[in-house]
Image (cartoon, rainbow, N blue to C red; front, top):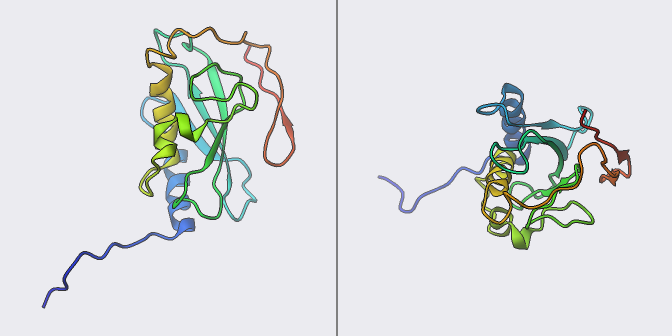
Length: 160
């Protein structure tokens, strides 16, 4: 009496984002990566903020990188847009805009619905440790240029 084939339950977008929010609020692993909602009043749960603390034994060590993640209405079927607010020199990041270029970052290029914002941040941290990025000269700290987020608000991040 079993049915042939496998049926997959698709978790609705808002339930998925609530799960991610709950996980982000609990903290991730060793605390070097975190994320949460950018605006608690955003009923569509589109705008998120992420933080990555640069990994040891790289030029990123001790630096704090702020990111914006934007989950469109088609998330998680399609990946969020990811932008570094903090200036960074990485092979997958557009130096002018801070956008993580999907064509240069396999997780976004080969997006799967099961991937999460946490996965993206952890993979970006791993990318910082890769041979092509671990020793790249970085912009000076504390001399951050403003970047405009999706709402048109100018954000600044100074590391003291």
